[in-house]
Length: 447
Ligand code: ADP
Ligand code: ASP
Ligand code: MG
Image (cartoon, rainbow, N blue to C red):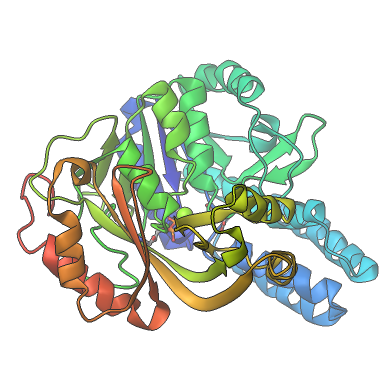
């Protein structure tokens, strides 16, 4: 068995779904289990509808809903009764939200789950019309999570048990199609795995059924040496390690959800990133240990919209417990810290989620001076080779001689070197680093 996950753009239209059907059909001998995202930008559109509804713009929400319904009807042909039933349920939910005027995390999940609930049925129907023997499975009956709505964590033992009982017998002679991203609590309340979470579903399903491979089909040729949204023209990474992929995903390579490789590592299942518009391209293979490569780094990831927090306390000179006090504040306000640099009396750190920043700042200011810089970016160079290549730092700073580097971190994970630069310098920084490290790409590792 293999798991084949198709992202939003890969199922955004009738034509795209037909392409997917062709790709799945060509791999039928490997007994594919198919995981699909919501069609195109449906998740964003559902969340926008929910916001309009709770903000009292009821008619606007209903109009947006009608447009979303038209889109789904137009891009499917067949499954009409199911689509209608889903939109009537969704309509009730939206009207309810407009009355309540409040959007709880639980309601957010109920709304955003419709994207994958619909797409998985539409794709199943399209496969069947083509003559493929496809069967739909509701992921909410198989993927069991905790109750942390919008960011739910799978309960692995129960989930794996359900997957291993339900899927292999069906997959013997049928193509199982499931929605990614969506799941449910033990008592059946709908949850979601976080934005971009369909990749994670694919990995969980792969681990649960002991798949031979987990394929992530998307709109790029694989993991590239730079984020194509920032620097087009990067090389395709032919192979990388689980550790490298996890690091790249964590530091912003959206092509893979950060949790995706965890189930794959646990069961040692290869992950392959492939392009649904160019299925002939070999993509990127992610395995426990990638073959050696002559370049010091494998790829450069970036995270935008980062906030830098600088904390200085001369009172803490020679005193202990400074870091403890700082982290206790971030912890209390449930704000994760991504990057960190410290010296005796000062600490710099980056955060992604600024929801509680004003309160955090007020608390920190009771024992230190705080300055905050917004519009920062993290640039992260990743490669298993970094740890054994001398002179990497010199090359990085050489390449960035005209860029103001705000913060640096290396050490914790030996395969990454991270820097903070202002958003305005991001493109220039990535360009210079890419030119420095990929001037001479090893043809065995990059294309
Ligand atoms: P899907 O809808 O298929 O899940 P995503 O939009 O989530 O697709 O992820 C694919 C996108 O990830 C690409 O279109 C690209 O813009 C972005 N991306 C960011 N960094 C990288 C990288 N290093 N390599 C490839 N793609 C990247
Ligand atoms: N549809 C969800 C999202 O847009 C999950 C996914 O596509 O991976 O975040
Ligand atoms: Mg994605």
